[in-house]
Image 1 (spheres, rainbow, N blue to C red):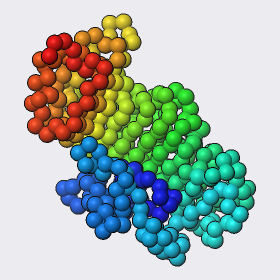
Image 2: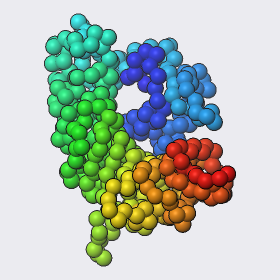
Image 3: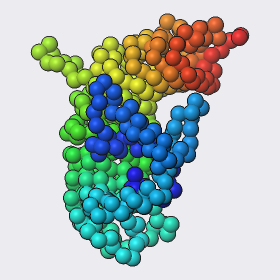
Image 4: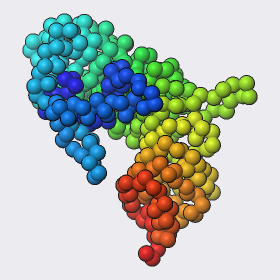
Length: 360
């Protein structure tokens, strides 16, 4: 946690993903790693070592900050054990043993676009680094190619998908901005067989190859917009991969929720899909939304229907496990609100842009 700057607001979901990728969370059957990590966080909050900064509508913790005393203690112990090295790219003094550091934290510079070349060159020599969390912009494209052993990479800019393919040990990849526009990840992404989280913010559209369905360690896939193809057909002699660990898929476009897809993502918890009527003869019924009801672990669903005609009620079916439901542009008649009212675990309902139409 000392990786983050002082008084930095830390998104709890991000912290949990980082802990899991680092191997800090122990398996306790039958609980998921995410649930176990949340218990760790609750314990730290109960001891006033973490302070809740932001809560959701129902009191769910969304972000926190680390107590200054705990952060200072973590930094001292990390320096003793050579566990973590924190620096800023414009620092005059180079931190000791930075070349041998296993975890690097680079904080944002208040002097934008200024950096000390000696610091940057020294960082590039830290070839044994396993983790890089960089809050500073314009640095990672120069730095990442030198750090081939990274397992955790959280940066604010990346210019080429090809750079990712070199990180064969990666478990957590999080990028913000400057991703190739309309980029297409190649089939070689499946070589990242340890990858648990792939999160890209700021990219308008990303096409994912069908080889994604072979990456059994995946837990979270989050993009601004994903085009994800159907799983490849298997011969009768082949067993298809089941992504048992996959918790999050967001944000999919015109995604076909076939029976095969449902079978492959049995433990999905969070799903966000948008459907865009852009083709002649386009029909929502071709996307098998009735199979939503078969996702028995699904807790959060966001469904956006852009430029679609009025949706037949029979095209919808929601799982009883839903706790949060967001609908946009569905144009369902208000009398069909009973579909939502029949969900026993629903806690949050958000309706946007004619989710329901007609007389109440």
